[in-house]
Length: 121
Image 1 (spheres, helix red, strand yellow):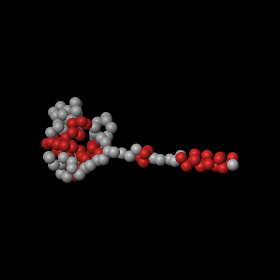
Image 2 (cartoon, one colour):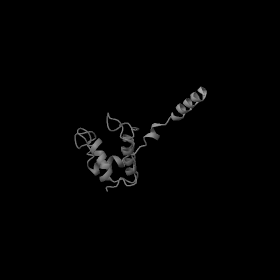
Image 3 (cartoon, one colour):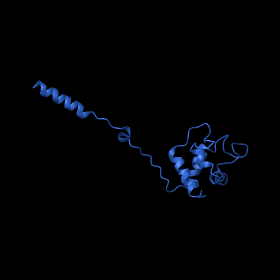
Image 4 (cartoon, one colour):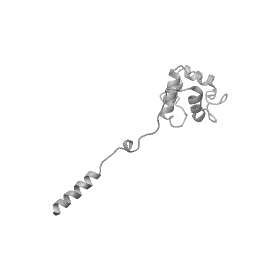
């Protein structure tokens, strides 16, 4: 009888313990939707938060002299191929300068916008 009780306790202990990955227990609720990326609704807010900040890309006398709050200035680096390597930290001038890389969703949104011809929408 004692062996049966010990066996049952062992079975209960091992059957109640299992290893689950954090991703299984806490699934991400963030979805990166790149199907409807627009300049005004998607790209401009990213630029305003990370790039067009004091001392960076806010016009003459800063960074490259371009104002990333203005579509025409951002279109310059989108068209000349400098924007994507900069935000992916694969080019000679990783941006944001001396800061962590943008989150993956923001990078994917910018890449999508550039690949679609960087429309002013």
